[in-house]
Amino acid sequence: MQKNTQKLHEPTLYEIFKVFLMLGLTSFGGPIAHLGFFNKELVVNRKWIDSHLFSELIALCQFLPGPSSSQVGLSIGFIKKGFSGAFAAWLGFTSPSAIIIILFGYGYVVYEQYIPFGVIHGLKIFAVSVVAHAIWTMGNSFCKDYKSIIIAILSAIIIIIWPTPLNQFLVILITGIISMFVLSASKKNYKKLSEFLISTKYALLILVSFFVILFSLPVLSAVFNDPVLNLIYSFFRAGSLVFGGGHVVLPLLQADIVSSGLVSNEKFLAGYGVAQAMPGPLFTFAAYLGAVSSIHPNGLLGGLIALIAIFLPSFLLIIGVLPFWSKIRDIIIIKRAIIGINACVVGVLIAAFYSPVFTSGILSLHDFVLALLLFLMLKFTKFPIWGSVIFGSLECGLYYSFF
Image 1 (spheres, one colour):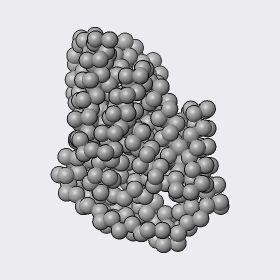
Image 2: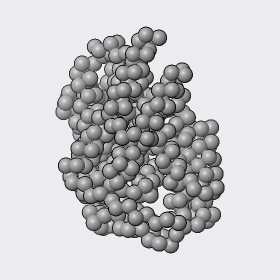
Image 3: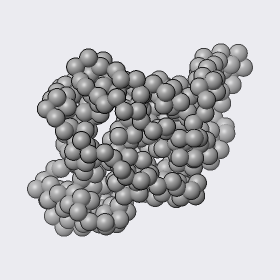
Image 4: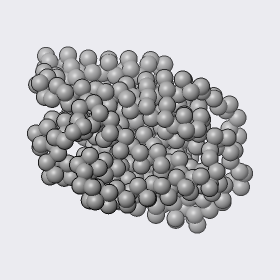
């Protein structure tokens, strides 16, 4: 087997923020598509981390609740530049959609009817090409023998048949357990993740603080009967307990926020429609709900409170878990599990590519041809991602305006 001699790039703090800001402006299509953007930009183009570590981070974040793509992003920032790197990655990736959706909260649905169908649909088609590119590159890296190919195919089939977040989690978990006993792995140890990782003592303290906040917030909100504490608890709980990313947290927030009267159902549905078309993480929908809520503070301050509350669990969990992950990943049975999980993640990508990415994005032969063209641009050219986004949206917008 050929050794990986790729020299990794060590970005500056400003570079981390700048690159993730660009990704936050151009990463359309939900968490699975975001991982495709991350893979192309951070692994293939910029070489910040290698493909093996990238896949490990995906596998780790699949096990944790919260927005998986945002967690992978802040993990990369943390590995490169510690706490400040994690914050810079999160701020860059999150701020574009958060700002846009808060502004939409002020304007409400005044301009909703003026957004052409083709422009939004073009973003979905672009997501098809991104996920296809991620399957291509990650499949080549992690499905090199018949066992891993079988794992990927079976994982995809199971998730397509039973497409629930819990089932996805169980498939990854069971794959990891079985792989401990049926796969083989190299005994060579990995390099240390980063000098910026904190000690396990502080990591444990961070994990304890997460559970303290989670269980103390409902008590505090009940004792003080403070609607702001209730709002914070609703979003912190959503960020703490939801597996499967932004698409899963939206109906949970609807049941919680709308039923409590904080946001009307009409406002919720209007924001939901816009959130689907936003670049970056879908969890920024919380900022919209905080901005339009019926309690004070709302507006900009309410949006920021809700945004921080829903993302705070991800910071605490990722930063608390990563140092332990750094120590246990050299254990041989863990290595075997990682190999199996890597292949399983490819299966997860295939399942997501089929539904909802392909089924909602490809409605005609035109859509298929455009998706294929965008895929070829991603695969064989250095055309910028933002340029591909604009090209796909404009082309699709013009097509559906005349046909």
